[in-house]
Image (cartoon, rainbow, N blue to C red; front, side, top):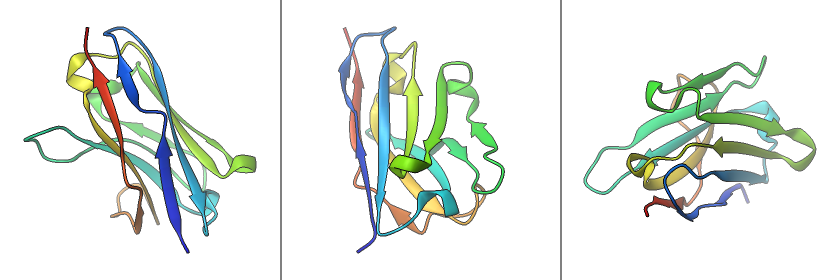
Length: 119
C-alpha cells in the first residue's frame, strides 16, 4: 500500500520554526519529485516548494524564498520542509505529494498536517 505521511505541524509563534516531514511507504521517494502544498481556510491550494527526482533541483514560491528549505533523506525515505521565520500568513494545512516532475500533478498525496502561526 502506497502512503505518504506528513508530520511536524503544530502551533508556533511568529518568527518561530517548524520542520515538516513527508515519509513514504510502499514507494521510494527518490524516484519521484516531491512537492509541498498548503491550503488555508477559504483559499485555494498553492504550491510551496518542490524537489526534483533526478538532479534534486529545488523550487520555492516567492512568499517563502529565503525562509523555507526543502531537502531529502533517501536513507529514511523522507522529504523535509524546514520552515523558519514563520508568519501568520503561513498558517494552513500542509500536504506533500509525489509525482513524475515538479511541473506535474501529484500521483500520491498525504493526509496533511496543520501549521498554525499565532501569538
